[in-house]
Image (cartoon, rainbow, N blue to C red; front, side):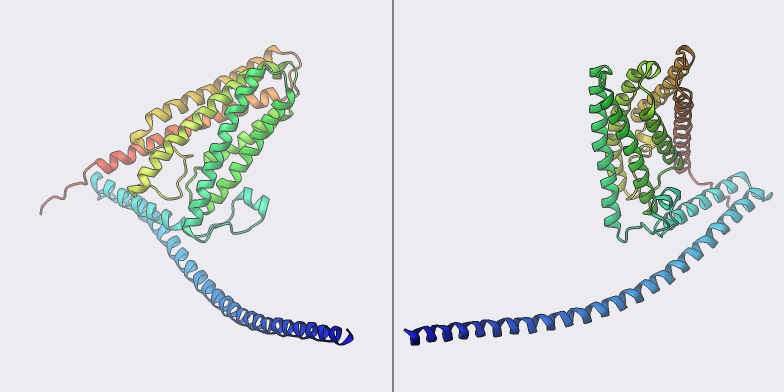
Length: 358
């Protein structure tokens, strides 16, 4: 029995030693793989640093040339306007060529990193948020569009629910206003990132979202007394209507952008924030102008509440002014965009001036 026990122990030790030797062999191979990986990583890091230095040098050269060309274009434009010997048609041709060149320079500049804007500097510091690949930029832009669409559905649902409840839940109303603050703040941050990556979002729409953050914040802290109760139903109707307008604009502009991108008439990073192409703007812009007039009506409602309700809160006149600014700014900006697109189409359709034969 003792001999058999000793043989079993010896057999167990032999098996353990064999397994240990096998593990050691595998570990030696793992160490060799790790050493090879470290060597490859060092080569990659060195090459990456070299490529980054070359890229930075080339970018600086391109931006330097671009700045000089932009300055030259401005000088040539002023010279063409001041030149007394040029005929009107010649001046028009010069301005058309300079405008086309300036547009190309703007497109080139959008492909390169720019300084972070105010909001991003406040939140993140002076960091580069430019995505390296166009596919990543387009994916981020699409996520921005999807985010706006999803929250728009929530806003439509929330405003409908609050209208149905008739103001019996102040908690839900506060949550709705907080949702609006968060939504407009998030949209503003994402728009700044998109601008850093080549999107052309007009300055007014960014200012519009800042004002919308302020409006939503004031509604959130407005005491739920008589003045608020008189205003609440009309604001919920406005929120519901605005959500439907934004949904219509998104659906319509998405189709237009898909078509214009396929034809090479719009940039990959263009968003649905801008107005549609001039050939298709009537249905959307007509509804947008109704929304802007609705904002004027809301401003007037707040003015009436301020004069009719005794001891109305300070939020009432401030909100009235902010809604007035939003309405006027939206109307003026939309009108200017339509006029610019119509002028661009007219200029594109007009034939170039004929040269007189000698």
